[in-house]
Length: 261
Image (cartoon, rainbow, N blue to C red; front, side, top):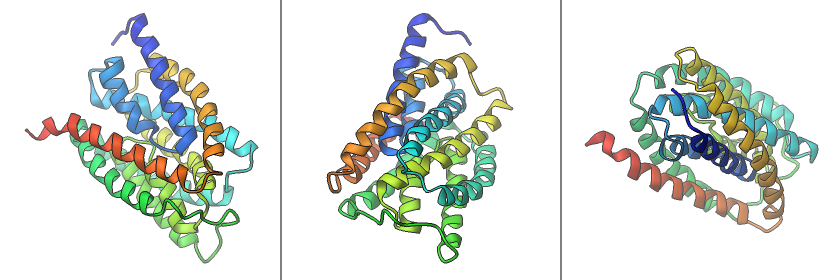
C-alpha cells in the first residue's frame, strides 16, 4: 500500500505521541499506536497496523530505555529475567493472534486494561521500594509474570507495558519509576518478537514504521523527563497511568464493539 505526504506527516506526529506515552508511563504506546494507525493515518488493515506499530513501539521503547539507563532507573537483572521469560510467550501469542479478528483482539484487551487500571489506581499511593532487586526468592515470581505477560503481549499485538509495569511492581515491589525504566527492556523484546512474526506474514509497512519511529524518538525523551518530575510528587504518576488506561480502554471498547454486532 502507498501513502501520501499528509499521511506520513500524521504518522510522524502519531509516533511522537506514542513515544511520549512510552517515556512517561513505560506503556500505552502500542495501545495508542494501533488506533492512531487505523483512524488517523488511515491503515486499512488491523493486522497491518498491529505489525507496523509493534516494530515502531519496540524501537521507540529502546530509545526511551537509553535515557532511563543513563539516569540509573533500570533494574537490569529484573529486566533480563522478565524479558527472557516473555519472549517465547510473545512468539506463541502473536502466532495465535494473527488468526483472530483484530478488532476483537482490541476489544478483549480493553477489558483487561480496565482491570489493570483499577489495580494501579488502588495502589496509587504506594511508592514501592527504590532498592528492590531480583533474587532467588522472587525470581520464580518474576519469571511467571514475565511469561504470562509475553503471551498477552504477543496475542494482542502490543508492547505490553500496561501489564509489564504492574507485573514488575507486584513481583518485586519496586518503585514505579524503576518499573517504568525496567519495563522498556521487555517492551522492546516483546515488540520485536511480535513484529518479526507479523513481518513474516507481510503485516509490516516498513516506510510508515520508519516515519513513526522518527517521531517517537523525539517524544520518548520528552516523556522520560516528564516521568522523572511526576515521580517526585507522591502517587501522581500512578494515578496518571491508571487514568490513561481507563481513557484508552473506553475509546477502544467504543471503536471495536462493532466487531460483535
